[in-house]
Length: 458
Image (cartoon, rainbow, N blue to C red; front, side, top):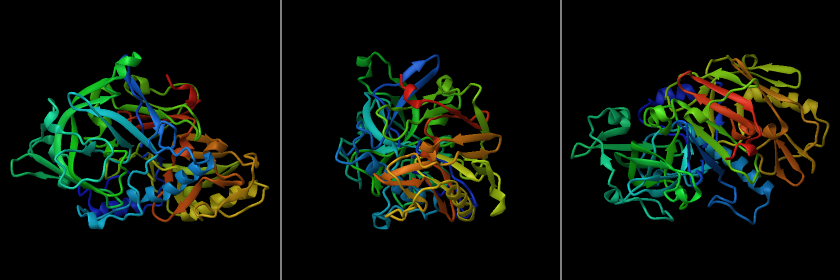
């Protein structure tokens, strides 16, 4: 879920969103991640498990659904996800919430603990937003939550932040002063969901407070900036509380981990339907190295919570399609965000791309009954002779397999996992599965390496 705050002007957001861009959605919203019961410390680095929202370990899991039904729902959630990236006017009114947009529909959830003694929280891990926030007592107006609200009065390490502080200043117009000169925050998202409350320091623990029973020690970090939300609204689920911001801004989790992460994090997403967990690593554990690694530069954009890349072309088999052929080419035309399942492309370019894919496949075409994906085939087999598709980022050619490019929506319905969008483009999590994807915020690069993510679990 990507936030749009008053920190960036409405005009600047429109300017970025109107690019013929490709937003790479890493659905590290993501994007939501579910953290395992422990975080493993290793020579300054540490790793956590990421559990897909439709896996048996997720509170959203529905055992009555078939694998293709779960996949179809993930695909259709992508449409709602795009609304998180689009500009919105700041709003704190429950009446302004669009109920059909589901704010907690990131693909991964993250379990962590906050406070001393630690209190377990389940939030959405989101590479498209920065602030870590959760629902707190006293709650003026909160959405229903299955587990108890966090009570900051019971945490020995909870400290409100002064409104003249560097942390409060970093929020821009999203931060303001209370009558007692402490920092308050006000944030709204692209779907008009919102959160308001106190900006504070507290201890954050990656891993359950009971993880010592499994032999692993949790990784705890003191004086982490969090938002303690007392007035929150939208269509958040009762099974979660708030957002874990993994973006590039000052108050994101990645930035606040400092030397513990050294500006590095990576993840390896297992294929849909796998019984294993995905893996997210920080610091020395997040270094991506090997002969098959390709790297592409991160491009600085406003707002800085997005991770933006440059996509130069896509190849279908031996046919290379340049982005600049259908519209003016712009550097930094991609956001990488794991919260979106599909890959979205500019409308004119998508037409050329889909046509090239269809020319390579000799199978019976059939419509998607939900009219979300436009290139679908009637086939009970995954073997339809689909071509090799390669994403050509600046300096990095990423060759995709069929599991990255086609998705099964029914027993006899197999569809191209790409769709057009008039304003945004996203390289989604399906395209990133079975790759180790590493971010180095010091070198300003994103790296890709083919990997068996099922074997990454420790």
